[in-house]
Length: 464
Ligand SMILES: *Cc1c(COP(=O)(O)O)cnc(C)c1O
Image 1 (cartoon, rainbow, N blue to C red):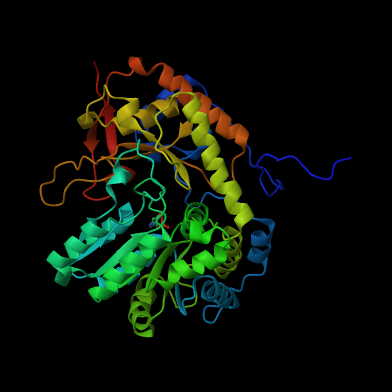
Image 2: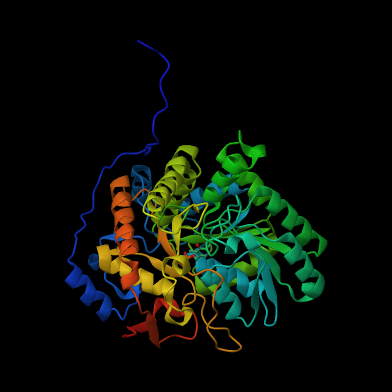
């Protein structure tokens, strides 16, 4: 018998202990449900959905160890042991001393920006996430997108499409540094397609921040996935552990906002972590007002306990190989059906280029949303438009902001679906792609909120 083994295929480093049943529906049911939902996918009930790829946020499967931590969580109002477990984990992984728990990521933004962002100021960085932009614009400040141009061409291959364009940022700082509140890097960059930011880029942005004496903040929702890309795509880090990379990444920032619903692998939660005690003191005031006392901040003790475990699990290489491997698997499968996808694939989702998929639908009829509706009708798969509807109107002109990219996002929840599910999704999109010439009309808005309209908007089908 040979002792050398042949190469084995990738495989999930876990098995299933508990299952949750799913039910398929008929095409007639889905046509009715989506019409009743005013063609807004957020209005569907979850049992009208077969495979839910709306988001990877809070939809992951917790491990047996996380569920174990739930049972031993400490629900003390002040000084909860579970808070200290979380704080020590964050101290250890990210290297920041001060931690404020919040009920989710946007709450962390709300608290931190209450200290940092004043009317008329700006926050440059790579592409801001929608709630981040919302919290900036809500304060009558402006988010300045300095992402590299490669991010806006889905056909260009670039290892770090989440990078900040250093020339753009430098030019902006030269012009307008007095108005800059702080510089923000979102890693991975959700809005640009879950694309990573390189360590080299982070180092260079740090230098710019230092030159202009500005704080550098990380929107850290997918920090572990970003670290995995750094390990795989930046030579210098090939033999580093994920935790070493995470430690170095965070060393260049002054503070972090976190949505624990992503790389914390919990269903709800968030936090702010920071180096400076004075900033912590100022943010504490808003945390107590908006979120709760400093040692729970809108979370149950058990949730903080599960998060402490989840953060450690999310920074294991085996887990990340399987996690990002599954996204890659779906992306490759879609390509075999000819579906136009963004490449390279991001960390948490595969993005479909709706402008290439549905070139016959004009931008004013929302090709991204049109495709979202078709995918739902085809197979009960729920996904999200990341395009014009999500980008809201320009706050000054109230015109639609036609984004450079009109994407449809298939977000993959962590540890939740199997490769069979991925095969089903790919086949369904393949079917839609085959009958694409039958799709001739898009949608028009009949109601929208002034900000973050995609969550609650109502649409109607434009008839031929
Ligand atoms: C999800 C997310 C947020 C907001 O977090 P919530 O927990 O949904 O409030 C902020 N930034 C990024 C990059 C995100 O992905």
